[in-house]
Image 1 (spheres, rainbow, N blue to C red):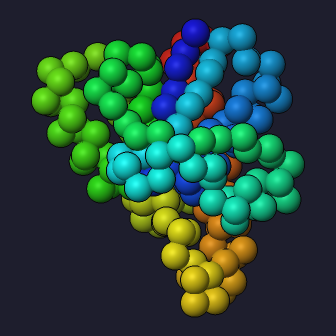
Image 2 (image 1 turned 180 degrees about the vertical axis):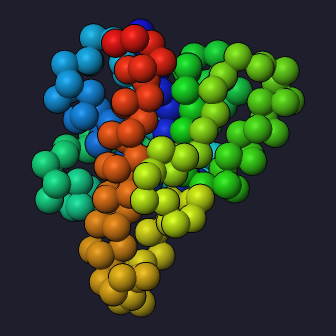
Length: 169
């Protein structure tokens, strides 16, 4: 079983959405018996909380169900997961430091947008603050979360191509 872990800061917006999209795409390609995923945050801000309501809303509007409780990344995750996918450079750096401290070198760490063929920057933007004042990079809160959905969906489709090639699936 190939195990993938998606990581953002609080584990209530980007990473649970990535997990939901990934699981849907894996199911569509009849690969669920070979590939599994989970998501975590590098912070302890939201441990035990469900995904942000706006994440759930955008997921549902795109045909994805999210049933999720936030948890924090831990050193044991290095041994359990084959691929660790960080949503941004800050979380990527945090994971690398933990990896060096754990002396575990047997993990594959990527930035999510390494797989985005339309990438204009390295980070998946954090939509958490979009809509708090009624704005985001594209307008409404829904637009900010939908933008993240589109980035993740593109990136995940390409990541699955990579996994299939890498593991000859």
